[in-house]
Length: 98
Length: 249
Image (cartoon, rainbow over all chains, first blue to last red; front, top):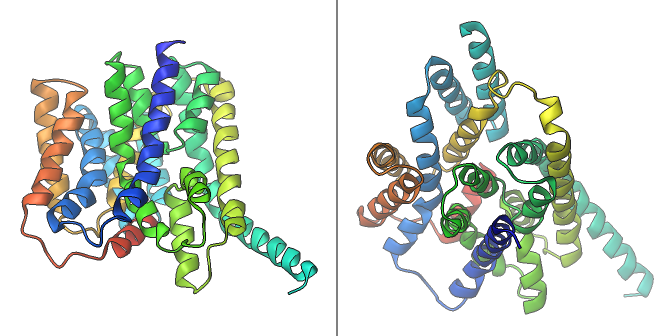
């Protein structure tokens, strides 16, 4: 089997463990330590931020405007609307700045 | 209760589940198409892209995965990154598990495979309305979303490159960053969100410049997580309330 195939299958297994793991582990405890919980709560925001920050740093006015608009729209509207607004700004500004 | 009323109950639950699932699979479809197109662009075959949607079934983690495929990083690191991005799911089954004591362990093991963000949100909403999460309702809500995710991935992988000729002009290379930022914004009501985001951003940029990709992901994320654990604990939300807030926002 190719390496890609192994990565996909193991990635699927790892994901499945996260989907059943919470129930399996937490159903055995009445409570979890507040610091552990605080760390767990921070996981998605922390991980996803590290994916945006370097790309934003490498970008220019079009990319920065797109992120700013997307973030502002996300404050008031569902995430998908914010995504579309950011994408529209990006495409429009790349078109005009080109 | 007669046999007919049991079966009409089932049809009713199935139908209500399907109706609850329509908005979520419509909203997710563009991301599946985007993933399919990006996966092929990053060197996966169409079959591998479809398999990844079927096996991993988590938009953000699949995007991260193919982003790293394109950079020729160590295989275990890609698997670990997928795991890290999906780690939030441990909250979902922990919360939903308390509402489905009537499900057998096998039923839970199968059902929780499909417990992605919007499926979790819809399940919590049903509990909020004082209704039981029956397995038939859950299947009616969750399975169309899963099938649509796979089908839309195939469409994106098969036809994406023809539909989107100039990746830069239509912003394909940067759409992921906007998408991830949208997800980050969705977690903003969580305690310590702003300090976590700021520290993760600064540390990941420094790591990106000094150590290099893809280590900036783990190093930046670890910095944010440790900060959250080290800050004085506030009156923490109950686990379930925090997870609901995140999934519905």
